[in-house]
Length: 364
Image (tube, rainbow, N blue to C red; front, side, top):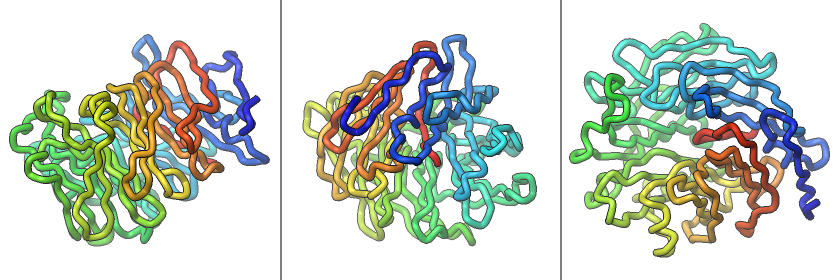
């Protein structure tokens, strides 16, 4: 038993529950994440704090991001980009409510966000024109698609709301794809990624921010927002592999992007590729995974490098809900680690036979 009360879970369950790490008092946490088994089947799973599998929905293809509404009644699970489905899940009854297919001429980019007004906003591509769009789906109309607005760039990926719940921040990755050639990146020589801010009521583009011209192949893919509206950015470099660009950035307000580099040895190990990014619950620091490098780096809210921990094929990151400065990190080998504020592993387990996908989320 560790000083933080970590409980080692046995191997009896199909999934071992990272939410067990939330076992302080009566606080109960559930983990939502996509995963795959070794037979090539894909699922959305939810476990309780004892590691029991509460929900296990088989998906038609590999899933990517999961978004939960503010009441924690519904979750949206998104196909990996360029994908053609979004499923809406009733978290209380643990069943699929609605299956959304991509509109004609559109494909999904793996992420979305619920708004307080009862809409689901999804990152999409109008692949014939190449423009990024944000699709609008109305929850009280069985998630019918009621419109869209431009994302402010090409290849919108992760999208988040700022604290005012009216401003959408979009990671426009800059990469053009088409569902007929799903993993082909069509415009690497001319790509121009940006971070865009949009008014969700009108769709008006408020402002955009790009990396410096020399790093125009830094694809802005994943973002996290702190309680004070600081945006942490995880990027993937599409240029020559011997170059060592900054892979992480911060942004706030009207400032320019603040590009961040780790110490040289750590920077090289990241192999020009970052996965998930999340702030801890109090916003004092954030974590960025690098699955190709097998590590997670930790940064202060001001951009100071704090440390790292090593974990093969790590990608999913979630803050712990009842520890203001700790994280969970999941990997493609079925493992999960609990990392404290000193970048130390204070609990871990592994389940053979499954691969956690890129993102995970803990809910109450």
